[in-house]
Amino acid sequence: MHLRRNFFLIILLFFNFYFLSIKLSYSQKVVPYQDDFFVIKHFTFSDGSSLDSIRLHYYYVGKPHLNKQGHVDNAVLIMHGTGGSGESLLTENFAGQLFKAGQILDANQYFIILPDAIGHGKSSKPSDGMRMQFPAYTYDDMVDADYLLLTQKLNVQHARLIMGTSMGAMHTWVFGYRYPDFMDALMPLASLPIEIAGRNRILRKMIIDAIEEDPAWNKGNYIQQPVLGLQHALDILMIMSSAPLQWQKEAPTKKSAEQYLEKYLSNAMKGKDANDMIYQFDASRAYNPAPYLSTIKAPLLAINSADDQINPPELKVLDTAILKVRKGKYILLPITSETRGHGTHSLPKIWGNYLKDFMKETEK
Image (cartoon, rainbow, N blue to C red; front, side):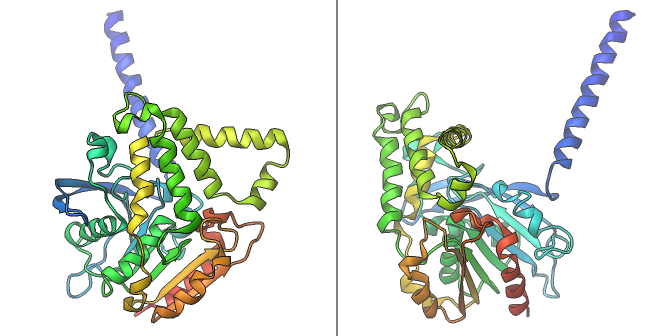
């Protein structure tokens, strides 16, 4: 009798814990969201290679609204940065400032789609098993996959807004000229519409070389992650995206600076795969919207931050490039106590008012 009673007690405790964990998990969401997969059959990459299928994972917030023609008319596509995922935008600083009731992209009004790009998150990537035999995807391939997700899986034939941060911002430019009639508005955050060259490409090449020159990498056939190569790559990435003013405030002493570095590396190493990282940073090799800027039809609002070390304003690239975009506008955010260098792209508190006005301007 005691054994039976203890058994049922254990079962009861198990289910209580299970449902409590689900409740806690749900309550920790900044905004209610769901996720799903889309399998694209016979996907051909820009270099001619192909896979029988690729898996594209995505998150979504809100619900699609159908117009009189039966088409979704409230879709917003938001694309993440290099090494990130759709989930990386479901934070309090980003989703919590944009998607809640009454906010600019209120999920009661908009159907917000946040894909994991090819090579990222839960989408198909080298670490799934193919390693360095995985097709060498480019930004064009990543954008084309997102387009297929929208049109074939989600019945979105026209987007209200396409925007992105960092790599996702570069994808926004690519969307603008590859599918010029597909959207009402474009908003790239922290990017330049030119070939990846100069300091930007040099640092990307250094990241790739740091991994490949680690003997433990073994041409991608490592048994364990090449820790030394990954650490050096992350050191370079840290420099690449640094924000000197803020770092000086956050780490004003030798001890705090070294602790800052240690904490960064500890967090950055979690879940990192060396082959995935190589592919992610080399995917930009063919990116170059410059020759196509005049073919972008939709209104475009480009926003950069003056303390962005990846897209430094002294290059004066956007100042002239935006003039080639028919309905283009460029905002350079000044350095303040609130900006965070390249990471300012994920802080709507800083640039949200520009998005709010842009949504009104492009309303049909």
